[in-house]
Amino acid sequence: HSSGAITALAYAVERPRIALGGIIVIGVITEPAGNRYMQTTPLLEKLRLPVLDIFGSQDLPLVLNNAKARADAAKNAGNGRYVQVRVNKANHFFTDHYNDLRASLSAWLAKLPAK
Image (cartoon, rainbow, N blue to C red; front, side):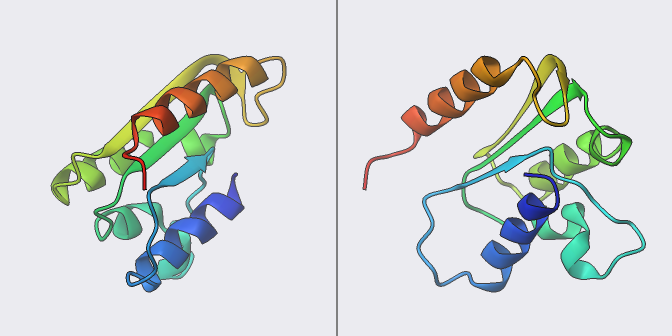
């Protein structure tokens, strides 16, 4: 979640030999002035594994303002396994929308191939 989500993206990109079935980023932030590990779009341009990018419609500006760029980066990378979900009326912490978050996570996880 949040800065932890971008940390997970960076880890997945930097460790491509580690077998991951997919990655979920919740309210992932980006820091345009930060180093390469703090910018979501360059990271997403390198990932080919399934990604669920979920955020609230009332999320932080750092999340909302970068949503289209994140989706475009995954598309430009040819990652057809990237999914972006915007939860209506949810804030960055999904206050009073935890059930919506859980339902989206469960539905996405159910679609992943079993290992």
